[in-house]
Length: 379
Image 1 (cartoon, rainbow, N blue to C red):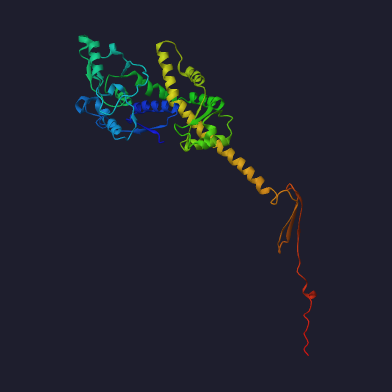
Image 2 (tube, rainbow, N blue to C red; image 1 turned 180 degrees about the vertical axis):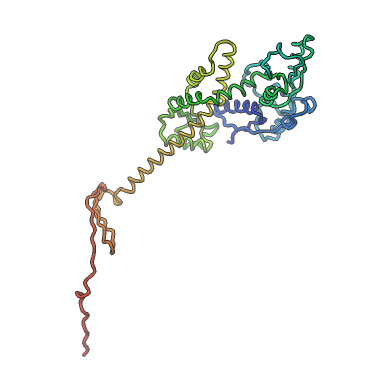
């Protein structure tokens, strides 16, 4: 059975959300892969959404891919979905919500009440524009609410460059693509997690969805777990072979609570509401980025170690085979003939142990000693 195909836009946030769903499916034993779909909204990055067709421009091509069965499901932000769904398609699942608030990213670090006169605030959301107009009222009629296009990182960059005095974005998107990435790149956090993985991570394997019959040769590993520090090389290689053939699913993970307890103190250094947001970002960074990155490193290194050990065991077995007695448990007298350097003679006992060896040179008869041919007489 082939993996499920998950359609998604190519933006960093869209891929994060699709990967989140793929990981959840993998945890349930269902293999899936991402299929990137370029939408009208991705191609037309300059024009206003209201001009090119509203938020439906981000999902039209995804819907077409679903209808044409190029993908089996699609993942997209609910806020960008049209109210009405095309015939034959349905919203079948909704992920658990994260932080529902909006966030202001300003060029100077100012909040809403400290924005300078005539400030340009970028947002492409009519809802956010209406909320901001209601917030400012007539007292700040000088505030300019301007359309802005681009992915989350593009919009943040525009604010940092001063193209806008501020931009308004979803807090969850910033959490997912902001602090989490910095956490993933932290050298100290990576070092601590590597040590934890090698000391406490467990290799877990299970049979892939609906693969019980073709995977019968791997039945010992349908529900297997063993510490990565102790797993024998032959077992690691067998599980990886089953995974390569699409019959098994393998993960290498330490206790999640221990991993978080190890890295949270590196980033959560204060108390208060902001500390809780940092803690959530650390959890997101570990589950989505850092934990998976270290797992890949451990998988590669454990494969290398297993290969090295397998080669060592094979070479030792081969050496024993080559040095064993060729005729079994018998005493052996072996002769290697040679005319120039002589015959080599070796005596081995029943265990193949060398008892004696020598060489013997065979000399041809001296010409003078050769018998003279007899003459034949007639008559």
